[in-house]
Image (cartoon, helix red, strand yellow):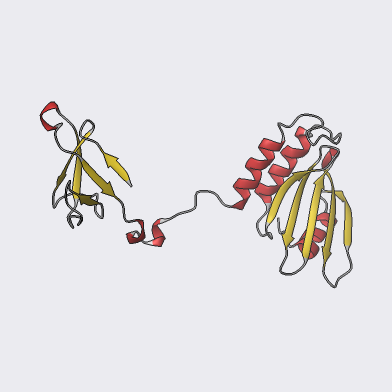
Length: 186
C-alpha cells in the first residue's frame, strides 16, 4: 500500500479515470470509495488533503503478464556474469573462465531449437558448461565447450547406460548425439 501525502499529490474521485481498480480511503473513513481516482500534481492551493490508495492486483487478468525473458536469456546472462570471475574464484584453484568457451556456449544457446531445462556453470579449467537436468526422470547431461570448437558431452539417466561423446561441435556425430541422447535439436 502506498500513501500519497498532501505535499506531493492531490487525489480526487472521478468517473473518467483509467486508474481503476484503485481504491481511495478518505481520512476518518474506514470503507474505501468504490469509484476510480485521478492523481494530479499538487499546487499550493491543494496542499491540505491527505489520501491513501491501494491497488487490487488480483483484479488484473493473468493474460496481461508476459514473461520478458525465457530460460535461454537467463542462462546467457549468467554466462556473462561467470565470464568476469577471476582465477581461483572458488578458493580451490579454479582457472579463470575462458572467454572463448563462454562465447561459444552463448552462441550455442542461440542455436538451440528444442531442449530440456538447462543451467550455466564452469569447469575447473575455466571451460563453459551447459548442464541439462530433469530430476523427475533421473536425467542429467552436460556439454563442455573446449578449444577449437571441440565439445565433451555426457549423459546419464536412471536405468540406462551412461553415454559420452567428444568431438567437433559442427560435426554430424555431435548433432546426432545431442539430439538422440540429450534432447537438443539445433
